[in-house]
Length: 72
Image 1 (cartoon, one colour):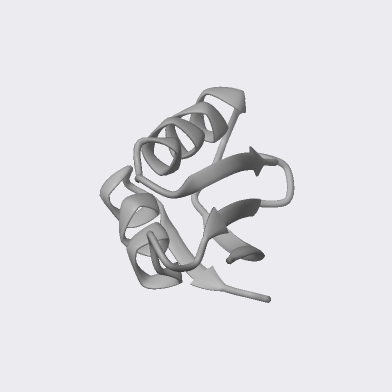
Image 2 (cartoon, helix red, strand yellow; image 1 turned 90 degrees about the vertical axis):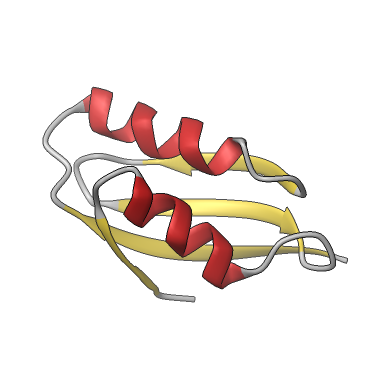
């Protein structure tokens, strides 16, 4: 089942930060699409809920070096 959730990341300074988060999240199996806005820190992720969890996505953002919280 495909779902979309929004994460709020902090510590982003430029588009390279967005790219790092996008690349980290895209590596997860089950992720269909990622859109990260460095100005707002908002990261929208569309993913297969049966293949990957919101907790795993948050962990990938943390591993990329940014704090993250699930917003919606």
